Image 1 (spheres, rainbow, N blue to C red):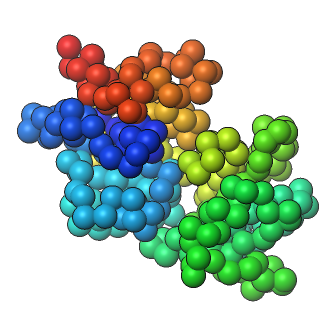
Image 2 (image 1 turned 60 degrees about the horizontal axis):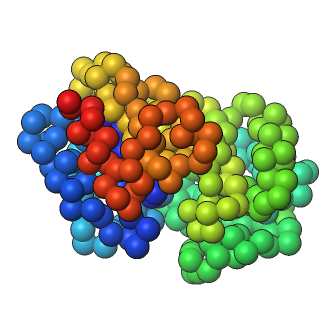
Length: 270
């Protein structure tokens, strides 16, 4: 089984895919390997990024593990949801820490969200503009909040790491996942999910369903929200565009713009 991240790993900086990377995934399928994309994107965001392109994979794990879909028709086969009470409790923590955040609706409508702006950093404003027509202000009364897929705190540098650590300590009842913003490549996104949600837990469920052991799994990623699946898989690589600390922890292949996925597959097969 092969698990590949999308942005910064398989997807190139210009929004295209390296033919060698796609050929490697196709060849794996022909040889009977299960192929999984594990992305932080929602299904809506994935469709918007790819358009009519269909990738040679069997499953896609969306929203860092909150949902899993079977390809090629993107049929959702599993989704996780925060209850209204869990959503309200997490929102109170974010309000107490006075940060900008968004609350995503339940799958499959988790491209829709409510938002709370403190000062509105550039990354926050850019995400609002990308989802124009799908976003609404946070209700003044938190009892009006219903279930959600996740909460997303957007923390601009500097000082983001310290704020994230403090928030994580107050959100121990949740699955809290850190990621670098795919929009500005600098801000820190802190994603708050139901307990147990992660890329690795979603991939583990697929592996178990297909009788595959972690030792027989290759994972390829480039950012902190890949870290759990990279540590779980029997063999893992990060692309050269990954942060320095991830490159120190995992073997490194070429960057996403230079066929890193194909290189990782070749090294694993050999």
